[in-house]
Image (cartoon, rainbow, N blue to C red):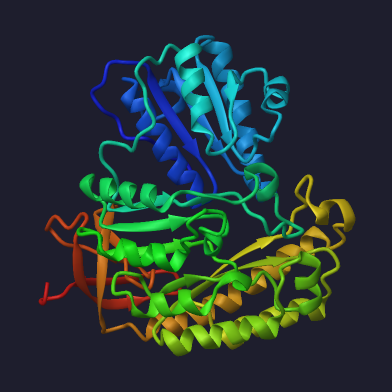
Length: 435
């Protein structure tokens, strides 16, 4: 995804931030923008208009890494034409040896590890002359704002590069998170999403030992917050206390992202996921028993090393059994430093991976069509996030994307929409007379 930062009236150096990858990257790009704004920089709409370009990269999948490398190539040509252009790289393309990245890509002026903003501030002051800048939130924000509550991951799933690039788990103090949430509300946020590579582990490393359930309860008390979400969850770490908190808290949305990755025990063991298919089933049953109208999304990797056709069919069967609202599917690609890349042969042919990916998408399209069709004619509450092609868009508490056309100004407001049309990917409707 490309992030084009909004233009403003500042007179300092122009910047553009390019972002790809997870919500954590998006949140970190917002914080980078806040720093640059505070230093007097002004946002611009594209690479060629900028004096400073920041690439916030992702290498969780080979396709994301290829896009980042391709963009670096584009910027090399741009810098040849405009030698004064400064290029900064962050995100998971940057490992512990950031100088190595600068050696590989001489067009890069500076690289810093994801989330290490103080390195950026020091560079901005010493090398780019950005005097007076400080780490802070942007002056205005979207109605739906992200709050990183922890960095890193301790799970070391065999396919995942995140622990090697973002490090081990480090939680932010609860008071800092609550303070940031209050500031975001002052800047226009109505919904906050708590972010972590393994958000369920929040607080285990803090002396006072708050957990995610306690954080959710504290956020409930902040005036101005209408909705609270959190991701990404790990099935082995979700506990009864958290489930009960989601069920009882009025502001916490009835939506959980619950990555299963595969529906076969042997593949899960090779992935080092720490649970079995049956344990995952029991977790889903428990969640649905406590939160009857919960919507569930999941992640699937197809073509993991050694995956047979039978094992893949086990995954399809699990999808049909559980009936997720949303499935994010990706073909396995070896990631450097991971156990799977070191120890397992990438032996599933690319055309087979593609076939399996298409099959999962087809299975899920049928499931999502059945689920979403049940909302046709119903009235749903939508938090309006923006406008596309003349239509307002936003999401329900259950994370359904809804479009509607109306002459009113609905940005950042909760509106009741009657659903006229349902597809596997979104809903369309009109403002209810009750609004």
